[in-house]
Amino acid sequence: MRAAAESKAKRFAVCIQNEGAEESLEPRKIYELLEDPAAEKRDYVRVIDEEGEDSLYPASWFLALDLPHAVEEALPEIADSKSAS
Image 1 (tube, one colour):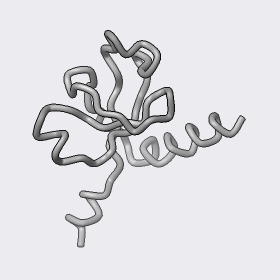
Image 2 (cartoon, helix red, strand yellow):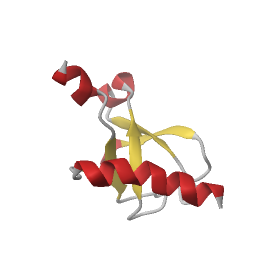
Image 3 (tube, one colour):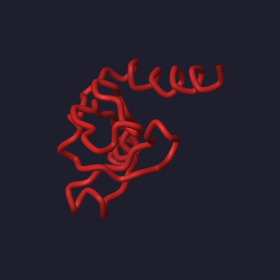
């Protein structure tokens, strides 16, 4: 049961590059990584970008973050409240 819960844990990464995608990604911003095993096999990650699109970007443009559980839980709520205003 624990393995299933861990596999569904949200993952986050900080954007470190956006060359050619300046309208879609902000450097130093934290993005939630969406699960996409096929993309990951090709060294890409799937994120919801600044245009609200579910898009693929090179994995090298992001650094994975190991965040405390409380921070992981708060980030989506913060993002939702910002988009509602």
